[in-house]
Each structure stands twice: as structure tokens, then as C-alpha cells.
Length: 269
Image 1 (cartoon, rainbow, N blue to C red):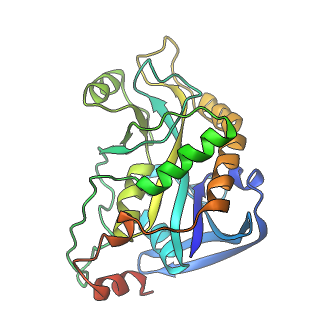
Image 2 (tube, rainbow, N blue to C red; image 1 turned 135 degrees about the horizontal axis):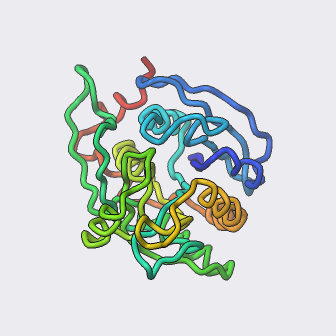
């Protein structure tokens, strides 16, 4: 199996990807551009979440094509970065967090890979929306590198591209949310449908609205991401170098539906 990484364009300048080759993969939901290469001696697929050069806002990303491209390329596990705003005073900017729960409050995105007139109807379990195996490996790698991370928390996925209002931040915190982002929630659900392990290392880039006296700017988000990406690259590289693709709950999402449903996912249309 191959390993996958999803991040922004700047991550490719930090991640020591060797023999990188850009390819375009056709799926039933459209095309996705990826880099094929090697990292720590392992075959790796890198995908630009917002497109090469960061051209796509979060609500316009073709998440389904991205996930199916990974599936067709034989990816079995994916690590992703995520810029997030904190919903709580106890999680200040610069915090690194590995979420274990999800609150999805998107409004207009595709909800499933199994969509269309010819698609089977599929219901999956997402009690643990982020892969427990990958989460444990992230925690272990961070500990070995002496990097402090928060090993759990609820990622709230909003539609974007705007940030939350002060009241939304307050309400989401009361519901149990810890950090807010715009992408990883959608990815988590679709990767689980594709039976691919998926986990996120979230960077708290800013205070949520109403938690700071200063209005939020995108510049501070970018600055914090740039500061933390080298550390994240080290953690990812260590996880990938030692990952042995053990059996996991993520690989059994479609067990009750059979191979016919699995095959439907990988057909290029």
C-alpha cells in the first residue's frame, strides 16, 4: 500500500519528497492532481488540498475526486494538516492537536461517495471519525521527537470561506467543540467510506472570534502555519517511515456491503 499526505502547497517545499512526479487521476467525480514520490523509503502520494497554488476555497474543493484518486492509487493511510481556530481559552494559538471527534456543520457539500443514480445506498459507522491507529502513531512520533501535542479533541468543520462569528464560537464551544476548521471533517467521512485510514494534525493558528480583542486576519493564520509546518513534517515523516499498515476498523467500513460496492468506488467514468 501507498501512504498519502494532504496539505497546502507550501508543505511540498518542507517535506523531503524524492523522485516526485505530478500526475492527474480521473475518477467518477472528476480529476485530481497529485504528486507521486518517495518519503523515508516509502511510496507516497501527496495531494494539494486547495489545488496547486492554493486556488480553491474550502467549499469548492472536489473532496470526492481527491479521495477516489487516493483509492485508485492504492493509498491505505492518509495524514493531513489542518489550520484551525481555537474555540477555548485553554487551547491557545501554537497548540498542536490530534482530534478524535468531529462535529460537521457544513451546509452544501456532497455528503457521500455513494451518490448518483447508479450508486448503491451505503450507511457507515463513524463512532471514531478519525483513524485510531494513525492517531496513536502521531502521538507516539510526537513524543519521540519531544513535541507537545494535545491527544484528543473535537474538530468542528464549517463551510467557510468566512470565519465564525463570536456567537458561533461560543455556541460551538458549549456543544463540545475544541477547534474549528473548514476541510478535515468532510475528508474524514469520505475517507472512511473509501476504507482508507485518515487522521489530522491540527495547528491552532488563531483565537476564535470573541476570544481576542483583535479581529482575525488571514495573514496570522498563514504565519502560524509557516512556523509549525517543519515540526509537522518531522512528525509525519516518522509516522510514515515506521508504518506497517496494520489491520484497522477503517478498512472494514463496507464489510456488510461486499466487494461489488468496493469495486464501484474505483471505476473511472
